[in-house]
Amino acid sequence: MILVTAHRRESFGPGLAAICQALAELAERLADHLIVYPLHLNPNVQEPVRASLEGHPNIKLIAPQGYSAFVALLRQCRIVLTDSGGLQEEAPALGKPVLVMREKTERPEGIDAGTAALVGTQTERIVATASRLLHDEAAYQRMARAVNPYGDGKAAERIVASLERFLRPDRKDSGVTARARPAIREDHAAKS
Image (cartoon, rainbow, N blue to C red):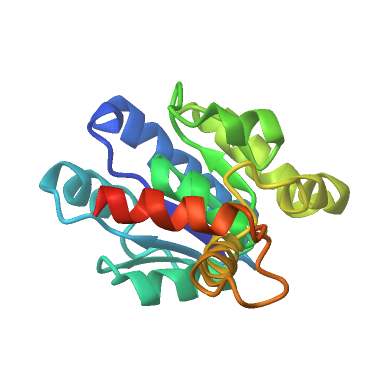
């Protein structure tokens, strides 16, 4: 499955038309792949996308999804085509290559790390890059296995462990030396 989101104002008009053309071409070339596009409610997105793609047998235009349902789609997809900044960070955490359908991004770390590729809104470039990822397993794996520059998903575990060490200084693995504990407590009490 190919998961698509495109809704940014900068894409309205010719950019969104080119994205729709790319999706139609991918649907023709990749008849064995389902393209799922949760469609933003903005009429500037709804109208041109529905006019271009509605009724295509392997393109499913669906209602916007809640976070849990969207993450379920993200887990199931093979690649992500998006103009969303947030997805450029979230998809690599699940090992999903991201094609960024924008001319520039505020998240260049993903491009630099290889978890995302900036393809713009040019039909030919979107089609060529998506096709290559879906047909060239080595190219796919390079992106899917690239080190996620936005973290490894273990920040919460590290925060909990750090808080436990700080709040339970009697534990041997607290990481806080006995000499530092009184100073930390005094400093904390003074700030309270």
